[in-house]
Image 1 (tube, rainbow, N blue to C red):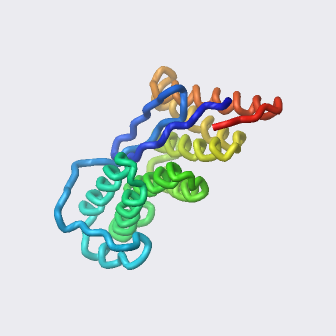
Image 2: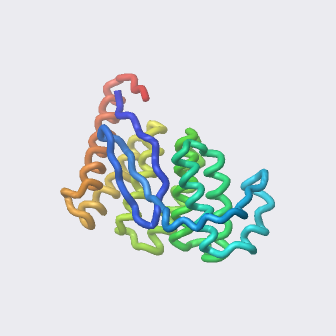
Image 3: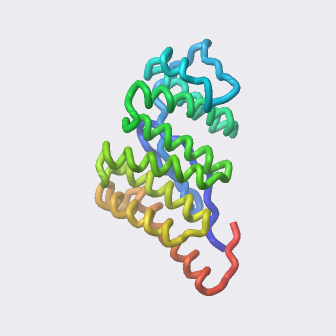
Length: 212
């Protein structure tokens, strides 16, 4: 039986790793000071008709929307979280540019929601956009990039694509060993993730049936 994956958490300006039962449980939190105000209203669709939002709100309000998405996520209200994240994404892309690190943070959190809904292809789409921006703006060996690599690996792991999962986790492990040290909790967790993937690969090659 392969290791079960825990749900992922949204990310904040700082990025934390939490590990339970040697599973892939890591994510970036993009949660700064909350700027809650009573006039935040959501329309019926997060995908259409939100252009007025982008022109009206400044980047700080985008952070508020993002943080509200974080709160809904932690309540298990994924659809509500997704609506706020998508609004925040539009504002940040328009106000900060499509390759800003804050945009990457929101892309990541959207990926988290889709992951927890079992929509792995959608999650992967947003994670890969996050990775492209993070590598460009932060550098290919930044610890935040390692977190994104890990998250991509988690998706592939859940799709039983162990070779791809291993590739991304090995990259994450290399960065964390270099930047954080071999004894850092994040590095230790990534190393255990690599071991879990290799065990899953071995079980598959031996003909065992793997279950979630």
